[in-house]
Image 1 (tube, rainbow, N blue to C red):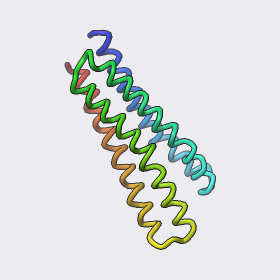
Image 2 (image 1 turned 120 degrees about the horizontal axis):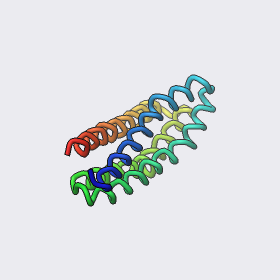
Image 3 (image 1 turned 120 degrees about the vertical axis):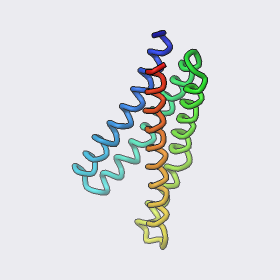
Image 4 (image 1 turned 90 degrees about the vertical axis):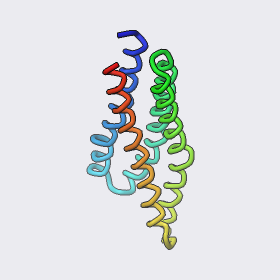
Length: 140
């Protein structure tokens, strides 16, 4: 196993582990431990960092993977683009929809649910893709 292969496996594992840790530990703990308003404030502060972390690791993985597999490199690059989209485009829209819902704007709750579902589906797609990429790298 080459050094770049080991690096790609470690980086993919760090991404998958980070995403699973958030989904399995952080999010449920926040909602169990904090009142709704404080949980919302915490998550608004947390998500930009989460997406930035994912984007940075994905870019590093894409660069390291060039020496191993162009397919894995492109995949990690696309994962990074999705993290950036979620952070820069989707997250502000979600926050605006949530604020509008709290202000009683008609249709805002439904809009928030749709945007939130989009973010969950993107995150799930990223996770599934990263796990698949990890298996692909490991068996080569």
